[in-house]
Image (cartoon, rainbow, N blue to C red):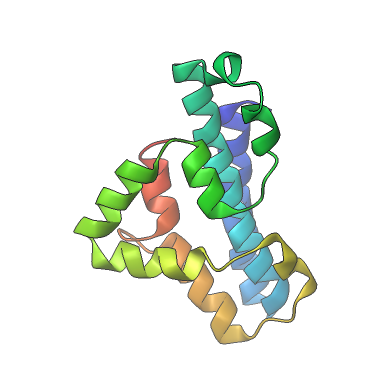
Length: 139
C-alpha cells in the first residue's frame, strides 16, 4: 500500500470510530481510533522511506515496520525530534499523546468503557491539539 492509501484508511478509521462511539460500541471505537493513528504513522514511515532511501541502506528496517507500536512507528518515521519538539511546545499535544500512546494492538481483545473510548477519540481528533491533527502536517 502507498502513502495515500494509508492516509485514506487513517481518515476512514477516524470516521468509523466516531460512528462506533455514536452507537455505544466503546471497545471497538477505542480500538479503531488507535488503529487510525497506526495507519497515519505508517504513511509517515513510507514518506521517510521515500525521502531517505533507508530501506536500501538498512535491510532490517522493513522487518521493523510490521510493528503496531505507535512509539516505534514514530521512530521508524524518523519523527522523534519533530514530534518531541511539537509536544514540548504544546502541553495539550503532549497530554493527548500520553493518552494515545497507551493504545496497543491488544486493545482489540479488551473491554473499554465509554470514558476510555471518548478520551482516546478526543486525544486523536481534537482541533488543533489532536495527535492525528499533528500527524497530518507531516504525512
